[in-house]
Amino acid sequence: MPSEVRLHRIGDRIKEELSELLLFKLNDPRLQGIYITDVLVDRELAYANIYISALEGSERAKDALAGFNSASGFIRRYLAGRVNLRSFPQLRFYWDPTPEQADHVEEILAEIREENES
Image (cartoon, rainbow, N blue to C red; front, top):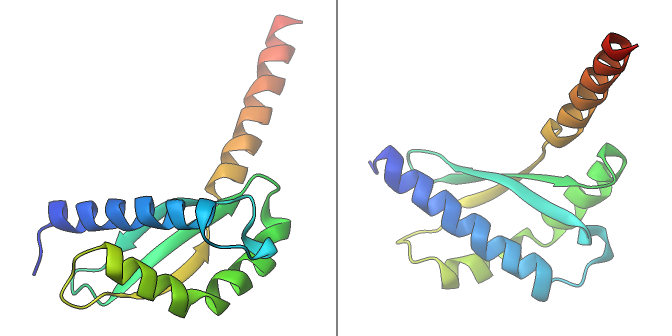
């Protein structure tokens, strides 16, 4: 089994290559403006869980996930050619609500600051 450090490095490499793929090679309009927030690879290297988000928020989640799932075979083949692993993990895509939640917390903190200044 690979070490935690190696799993993290593999995840970072997949994230880097997938980000480049999104910018330069994929032309699906459902994937425009989508960014990768995290990639977690399981200990057996069987699955890579890819977390995505968009600036517009969760209203794009359904279309973006459908776009990634329809292109997953192409994406996996591309990544397998770029990331040197004996067998490349299956890709699973998930929506990451963390950026939206962070914005909501920031709004609440800004309201509290305004109330304290008054």
